[in-house]
Length: 309
Image (cartoon, rainbow, N blue to C red):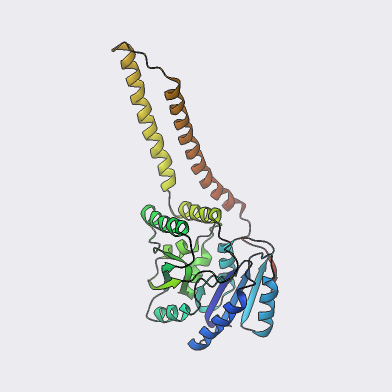
């Protein structure tokens, strides 16, 4: 049965935060006076997150859950919640309480002003290192420069959008999901509200620097061909430099009577060319990997347990 609002929350090892999360979400929704469903996705947690989810769902029929057979990733978890959602509006929010649930009310009011998508833009990110803030800021600005998709700066997946946006998202067959980019790609009318992102309440972040790099590279290769162009341009530049060096060597030998020698210069040249070649092959390989995943066409996730009928 359709409801006014679906709240999709991916969870990975969040047993220490889930009860406070539920309490704050419930308080916020009751204040908004809308019908709702809370969809909790357990992304292969190794702690007692699933037990906590089942306890909450047993007491509240508005709470639905999906538990994956293993960790399939943050984006597939969000997508799974979207597939099961029935709300006229859908909000995506992480379960670590860094994104305050109380902001949902502001997002909802902004949506009612005639927008189709409302992003939550981070003015400040408490409790995060200088390195993490800097790398995130650099990533968003690189994405803005090299893609034609107007992805809003300093926004994450915390957003609220109408059912028609969700319908179009579900039509996208990308195996490496980058939802914030896909939402922006759709081109619906959008707005944003500014907020301060809180520090993590309990536990430790599952989003390591390695995961951040993988996620960033998925976003770049999914929405831009710039890396391929970079490989081509690098090859042209290196070829031009090599051609000029050949001319210089020939002139030095035939005209000036000098011999160019030096083991160091030869090794630097060889290593430089080798580095460019390996980088280019790696970039091409990344795009081929995406094609390979699309051809295999495996499911995004496997459900171990759920209370959806």
